[in-house]
Image (cartoon, rainbow, N blue to C red; front, side, top):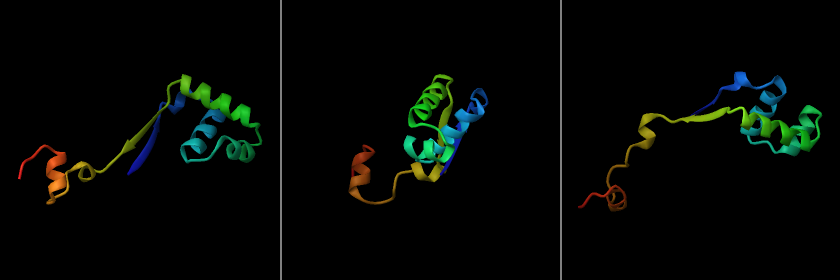
Length: 82
């Protein structure tokens, strides 16, 4: 699995920093501490970044989405009869 952040060129440097840390799973409080900002500033920067339309894209290998072999549950889930 790979994660890409797209349309980041629309964001300011500080917005990019905040978005990357947020997408890595950090809370606003932790991001604020790391960057020397207030949590409300982090929230504002995230809001502005979302308004500018950055995208998070998850890229999965093709085989991840293929049905598993065998098993009745799999066949029922995909509408196949035994």
